[in-house]
Image (tube, rainbow, N blue to C red; front, side, top):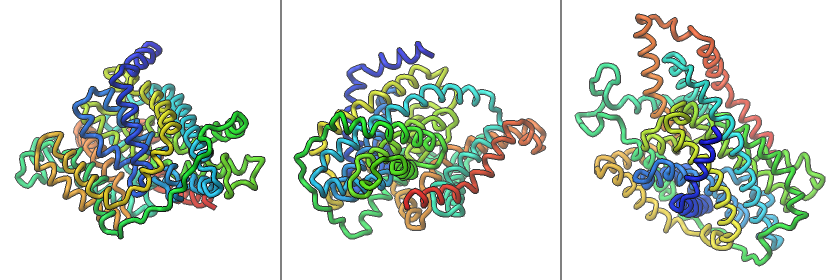
Length: 495
């Protein structure tokens, strides 16, 4: 493995990859700093651009958007008390209080340093846990892949919404969409309505852009144009003193462990990690009285935890094909565009690409640190861009991006259709990430089920024939009821 790691860093420092990191992190920070936009939406918009890039460069770009957006949410949370992403909600508690005291620079400096440390430390588990889990996946047969797909669906459908019924309904809707196209066993067309362009199924990129980007345009247009908050000008230092760095070090290390573990657990997400990191920072602090009044420990606890989720969430995504959260569900689309399937092949057949991506993920953290420290004041101004500008810009990018992959107007129409579907999904509080995951896992589960029954003459006993099957069945049952536990945890750490 060491030769792959070394080669990965050598490839990652190529000029084109360094430029890709800087640009993608900058775009990600801008997306994260704009309230109303999300990391998942940003990744979905950028996927068409990565189509013409080398696979490793394209994945590095998606990582830059992901990490940049998670940090970028803290900028608007600190300066205008409006979290750019849900992952920065806890950051707003103490960050805005420091802004009111004229210490916005210190708050932003704490956020970027803690984000950098949390993201960088999360790379440790990404390097050392992913190959091991991938080796386990090599032992999977058709029955195991069937239960794995069910496990993935129940995890994200259950945890990512307030209602278990709505979550499972979202997954079922995605499974229905996944049946569009050619039957994998019999070769007949299903639900294509005579459209030959759908024989391979729904165009994945256009579907992603519709669900995450065009739907957000409709949501923004449906509401009164957002009035931006007053931006407080700041002249204090962004860099922290040695004493302040020493103060937040234990908090950052603690939040890294919290965020990494939550990231590895599929479906938990960065927002829960943010509140847990903040609460544990308050619990362990020697200055509890400062929390809620402007504590840099509180900012560090939140930001280190939510950025540590990024590396952790990639582990189940790359090895088992189960995204840790909605952003990595969209990133799987980037893998599929490059004709790369999550699983053992990423660490054998595509090991060069995978370890270049890992190295790029490490270097992205340094790019984020540099951009955050040097461009804090500029990004602060961007966070106040009005919805009147955002709506037409995102609309145009959605249309161009959906057309660009196959030069097909059919894809644009499908994008608009799924934009409306995504809008309705959000209105009814369903979960678009579950639909995306079902589009990916649906064919895997169908193939696993039908091949298993074919191998055993239609006898379903083969689905219960191995210990791995029973482990996955137990995990499926547990994941269905896990939302109640996760909701209690989230409410506890918000108090």
